[in-house]
Length: 239
Image 1: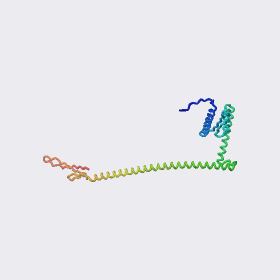
Image 2: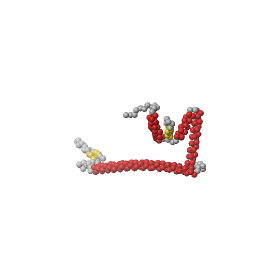
Image 3: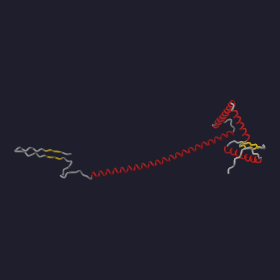
Image 4: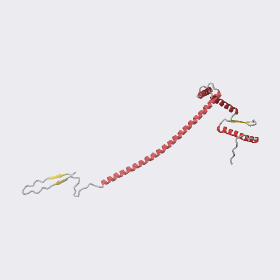
């Protein structure tokens, strides 16, 4: 069963009221401590019992918490007044100018300028700071160079693999060209062999087909006593 609802009102019984106060007070202080640790908050709790006894908890110092509270409360009240608001922002601007001046001076000191007013301890602290900064820069540079070397090695391996694939393709093309060339030579040799195995055709009567052919036509027989005319020869030559 779940816990029943408790009516939020003053407990009449003094004993019960004291027990409830003790339990709730412990829980409240525990929650305040957990809040300050988990959330990195500055917490201050002040409790007065019905008998006038004081219980408090502060994550840092109760005086600093109270001073901070009073300061912020005063600033909030001043922001409600236009004149006070102007003064507030003037103080903020002066504080920012002062901080900027300090940062510029510190930057010049890091660059090796305006060191005359520094003591030996200040110079030693500045030297340590520079050494730590230089160490961080070197570590960052080494990390970048290492990453670049890894990337170049990866690209080199990819290029090597691509070259191997291209060499294999070139070898296959050379083999195919050699086979095609071999087939072409074999076909040409076979064609020449077929030509040499068939001599030129000749007629059975001994005449050469490529030699000239001579034809002679006979004249008709003469009638009566007419002298026979001379025979006509027709020569045809076939190339």
